[in-house]
Length: 160
Image 1 (spheres, rainbow, N blue to C red):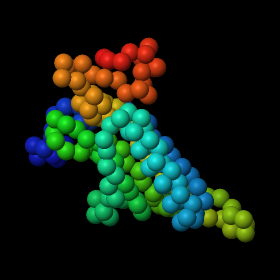
Image 2: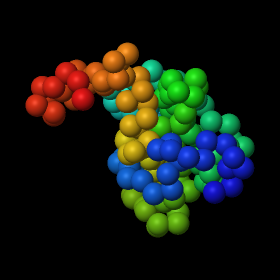
Image 3: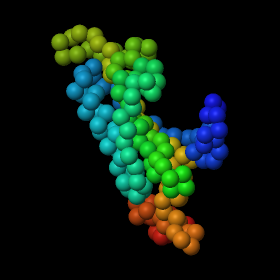
Image 4: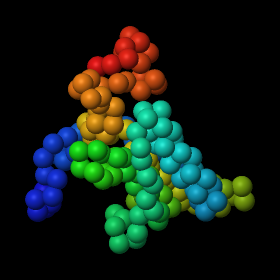
């Protein structure tokens, strides 16, 4: 929708997909929400390292962020067939923007009622992650070598 001919087909551009999101509601403190942002981003990076997928982390400019976002990182995974990185994850800090709309409040140590900070992170989006997973692990004979981390889940198989 609205892509004007750019990458409009295939698993990267499906309009319906499943994803696992991680949400954090924390105290309204810049240092605390920054620490949570780093932790969430680190979890997404750890997943890609375990899947042995090359990636890069992008600090998203404010002009590219959605409404209410204070900070956002996109993680782009390498897609060999395109010869470029494509977004597979994003991690966002919204400070109290969502909390105000949802009336998520808490009482701080001084007894003052405050709006919480919220953060969210795409842990895994399917089928979007399948493209870099399959392409980065495909062998010359057409098989797909499974990353060590998922072999136990597939009966110890080395290849698909």
